[in-house]
Length: 96
Image (cartoon, one colour):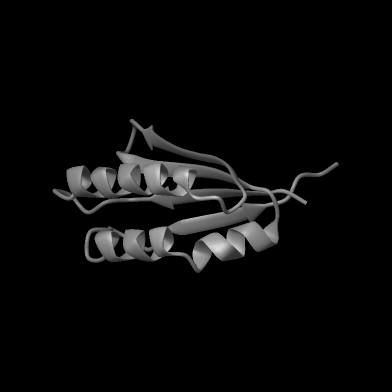
């Protein structure tokens, strides 16, 4: 079963550029991996400056492999100390 992930990222004031650069780099890396990623899209909410990552994974195993991989770890390191709050992550399953 596919899994959709919606992650909300809120940068600290003054860290917006660095956070966006780290997120853009992660998109490039994740899309280049062969880990079952079907969608990895960075969006911004212009009303509050937050970022929203929308991801689609072939299955839970693909998502788990991604979470244990280097791109995910490197993103965590790049975002350390730059966020206003912890990332809010929702993993969703389709109703079919």
